[in-house]
Amino acid sequence: MKILHLADTHIGYSAYNKLDDNSINQREVDVFNAFAQVIDYAIDSKVNLVLHSGDLFDTVRPSNRAISFAIGQLLRLSNAGIPTVIISGNHETPRLRETGSVFKVFEHIENLHLAYTGKCQTFEFGDLKVHALPHCADKELFEEELDAMKPDKKFKFNIAMLHSAVSGLAVFRMNEFNELMATDSQLNQDWDYVALGHYHEHVEVGKNIVYAGSTERFGFGQVGQPKGFVLLDLKKNKWKFHEINIRPMLDLRTIDCNGKKADDISTKIQKSIEKADLEGAIARQKLQDINRRELGLLDTGHIRKLTKDTLHFELRPATLEAGQKIASQDAAFDSLEREFVSYLDKAAVENADPKKVEALGLKYLAGGLEE
Ligand SMILES: [Mn+2]
Image (tube, rainbow, N blue to C red; front, side, top):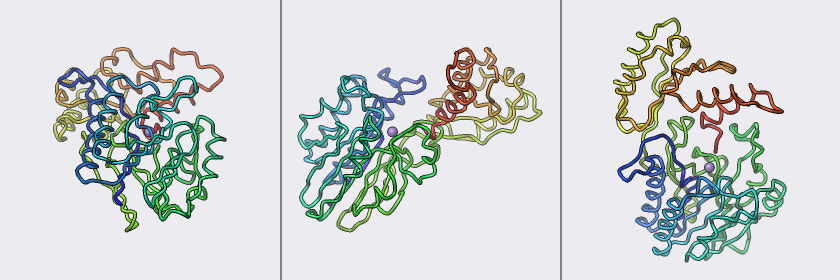
């Protein structure tokens, strides 16, 4: 039995300003394409089952375009006779029950099995039982459901699906976002495979306990991470990660600007840009220890010309520290980080240390923690 495990497709995500030929945000289209590539693979290689471990959509209320795209792709699987199980993730689960789930519109698609009501549901496929635990709005409920999840010995194979953090994994150690967390002992049951979603980097956290990772990169924190899906052969007890082709995202080598004048820095930026293959790429140039005056004097118009073939290019002064004022003349080339810091400067932060809020916000924007 060949099983394809994917997760965190975030359909509906969009970013940056570039549009495609149909005037649709190019990153939104990229995310569509990544998903379609996985579906193509599933159909072409005739897998027996597809498992999606949550965050199919980027938001609780996806656009009509996102919903119709997703339906179209899921129907391709359905028409090919490939059963598919999807659990809801934190991105698409409404906090209020009254909001209702977008998953409800998929309920009548043949061969599609959905778990999105905050409870573990099981689905049987011959000698395999899939135990699918969606994201829960309530932490205690999630714990209860997770504790109750046990392999069913009447079946030859048992797979668990969940969308959560895992304790013990370095990136989740702080648990600062109060996210749902599964412990090693909860996961180390007699599962043949645990199909995880939530963490965007593909990683095996324990024997056959696997994050498929996201199918696209959603921030510079994911530079260098291959993206794709996992192909699992239950009988052979083996799985393999398959990389898909997505748009390059890169961090150019950091330029040390300490004591340097704007002209000199501009030349270095130009060389750095010319050396890299940036056509169609998403790229960032970090500027270490740049003097604020020199930053304001950089010829951003020229840099913009040099990078016109990129999908997105940003300069990132690495000296950005808490409380620093952002000069308004930089606005034309502002990164989200600078925008955020300047916003915080003006906004009143209540009941919290503004510096902590800023540090946390910048961490989120770096992409490493926003799953
Ligand atoms: Mn996610």
